[in-house]
Image 1 (cartoon, rainbow, N blue to C red):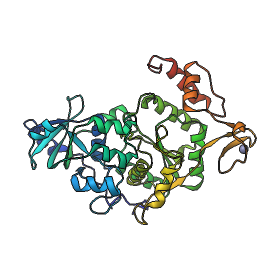
Image 2: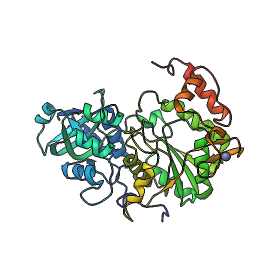
Image 3: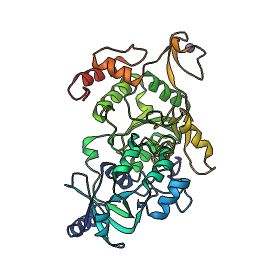
Image 4: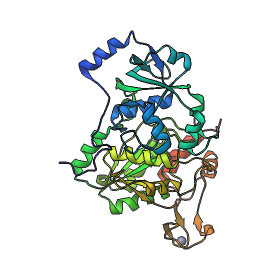
Amino acid sequence: MSSLVPPHGGRLLPLLISGDARHRALSEAKTLPRISLSSREVSDLIMLAMGAFSPLEGFMGKGDYQRVVKEMRLTNDLLWPVPITLSASKEEADRIKEGERIVLVNSGGDEVMASMLVQEKYSYDKRAEALQVFGTDDEQHPGVKKIYEQGEVYLGGTVEVFSEGGYSERFPEFAQPAETRAIFTDKGWTTIAAFQTRNPMHRSHEYLTKIALEVCDGLFIHPIVGKLKSGDVPAEVRMECYKVLLDNYYPEDRVVLKVYPMEMRYAGPREAVLHAIIRQNFGCSHLIVGRDHAGVGNYYGPFDAQRIFDELSPGDLHIQPLKVDSTFWCRKCDSMASAKTCPHADEDRLLISGTKLREMLTKGERPPEQFSRKEVVDILVKYYQSDAGSPQ
Ligand SMILES: [Zn+2]
């Protein structure tokens, strides 16, 4: 018997098919109408394939979509904060009948990724979705921009997925919820704190995760490796940073590092809830939720992503947020600290903004060791001084 938290909705529902079923479905697929997926839709499809979006069985139909946008709930009342949708242009949608099976190909169009039974076609209001889910209709917001760019019809229906998009070849740390649950159970862990990250980890992140490690059986470092916005550090470079940090500064038997393929939507509070549901599916009891979790620019207040958890009903989630404030090195405390523990002023604190840090690293300047471990800085300086890391 597992002593881990249950999956969201009660059971894991991976939608990847294999063996004979996959062969049969792939040969049927040859003659079916095709829809090309955006990179975000590909990443959502792989999340469905893995069971990371359990208990969803495909892209949302109109009932679920409308209720999720307005009330953060599926039609069966289960908490779900962000629509998981498949868009098509009007012309594409006109060629497909409800009740028909179609094939989903990746954005390059060279890989058949899944088949889908189209149960519903429906139009939707892009601006209303943006306002409700992102709290803004500003097209400068990277998540909102993607909604404005997509087709004007949504296709809802169940999917059978044939491919995980090459993630397991690209990342040896790619793991499905069923796999991490088995790892945690093997280790005898009950309480596991997940750390969501899309950045290299500096001392402040190390400190956050170690606060969690003081009170939980294990730590699950779980970087997002789907496409990010421009200016973010690529996943392969970040993986090097995580590994060198874990190798040198964490007890080996208390940390698990795995990746997942979602794309950031930067939906702030609502995305924080999605991150929690996903980590519950992976078997975690806690999610570290810091300042401006899953935010971008100035669209959300620093603690909005923590507060949203207070508005949920008891029983909505089995995972709990570990709410932490921003952390930093304080010269007067002479240690890592947070706004909750340090009484000193900003000028005593070692604070370097993301923009400033990028500028320093691009020039080959090293931030102080109290800000970032030397092993991590070595990797970042090398990246920012390479062609790949130079600003466009
Ligand atoms: Zn202090």
